[in-house]
Length: 256
Image (cartoon, rainbow, N blue to C red; front, side):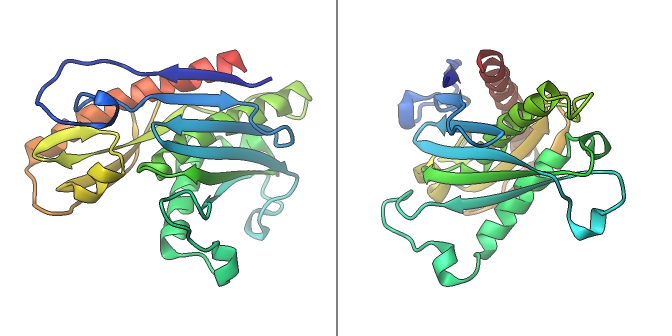
């Protein structure tokens, strides 16, 4: 049975901006996580962050990469892709081109690193948890939505392994989620959509655990440099937004 959990948090205005969904600068887009979206994967969710929709499936494979054979530990890895009409114009499937783009490889490595940061690979045993993140509809923040949704898919797969008696203890150490932040029209904003992302002065992707620890910080000045105070504000906004996303993850698991 499909279940969903969602959050749309109102916060006080700090500046006047015209944002999608009439959001304040520090407000997430409406976000929901629907579990059990496909029937065959050990864990499956559809995450919606505004108009960005990503299908995240977790598959359990009873094998590990060659470099881990006989070492008594598992592996968590990810693949990422954008469907041909996930954007305003059709893009070719990368399989048709015969190779993945550098962007795709960078994003799927980020997803894998983010999930491994909260896994005890020895407790997982000699098996692989493979996460497939397919962007159905893109409006900015696809890598962040993929990380946030993939964690729930992974948690569902772990829950199934425990229910089957395959795992005595959960290898999950904590939650992990991600959000984009940036400077748009001179204001720090959370959860950039495509219009904001393509026109911002600075853009960052922040990955954090439920304990509030940083996993990864990706950031760059796009149109203008920025001061340390602006960076501190963006990190604070990201931390608050990720706490909200983790609450949505918890609601989705409780409803599954």
